[in-house]
Image (cartoon, rainbow, N blue to C red; front, top):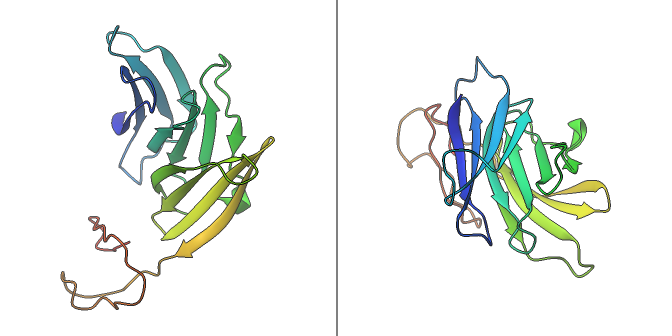
Length: 176
């Protein structure tokens, strides 16, 4: 497995969250999440085995023991690393997940009801707001960025509209 995601813990500056998987789309397998402390970097503080490769992860800024993880298969899981059973506390359902890899997770401020929430962006161009309500991960699609099919390697064929977005280029020549 390869290191596919790195993130500093939002509160504990000596804690690094590391995700493992593979970038080989034809050879996907299991993944790992390891939490390392700089106080003892030779052995992880916590090991979480996953059924799919990790693509991104980030701890909550208000509850640093809660980590949201985006996977290659488009699923999202939220772990409470204080528990030792390492099963996700929240998980996106098959019908509510992204259909392609999760590229980024960003925690947001709690909503007016005090619920934690974060946004994710998948390779298919969907930006989804996830709200953690009781034992449920509730999705709400914020934005769908359409793919632009083009023949040459330039920005000339992109349609510029009212939406300003960061353009990411991947080796498959599709931009998001």
